[in-house]
Image (tube, rainbow, N blue to C red; front, side, top):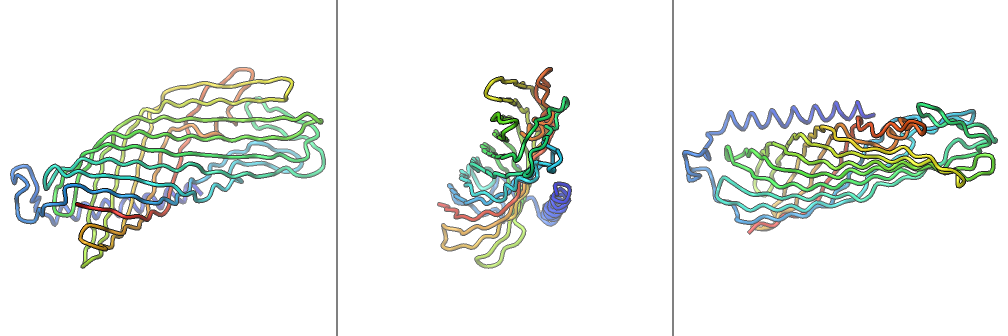
Length: 323
């Protein structure tokens, strides 16, 4: 599934890149430094712009085998996190006709899904870790998967042509992931819980392009890529109520982010726009709970792997106010 979504991501990336290059080729760079932003075609924008959007994003499931046994398998992709509602707030302050300061906050809190598997006669269930752990007399396993996403951006944008802007800035992301399982083995309640945490700090560059405008309708797109230092950590706890074992650790990783979006706009008044769109985001080198669990070693802790990636996509709808 993830491979298929990456192909769609590449198609969207090439589409937006080609539109941006077309805008550059057709534009006159009316807003270069020598023009002082006073050239014909650089219409003065509103000084302030504020937007609020509802997000409906899906976090694509990863695929790791957690348990296996005579009653079947319990894989991480059996948790269908689906689409979750969140919100985005953004603001822009135009210093002049060409240069603007921007801020953007995005939050989805939280995806959650429960699933029951390995249902059947009492039998062995094996935890799929480097040193496999066998649990006898298991008749079913209950699992819960949760995930959160928060992002803050501070940036500056510079108009290259009437329809194209270059953007750059700083970004901070929080990506938290948790997976837990509960069952009885030989009459003893047992739980296994893994919490993975990612804190990403870095910079990004991108393009914003006006792709189409007619009357009160317009279509614009944005793309941005960035490099981030990821302070990743994880903690996995195996608890029988009588004894506990833990694998935990933290490490720094270099992560890559790519994000694309398309927005259709309808001007409701001279100051208010209705905006609806679609966006995707891909982040590499992060700690994902199911991946950290299957790498856990309760005798010689592995620390944190943080070699997975996460992919988000979905629809947005909201309003933008300019004055």
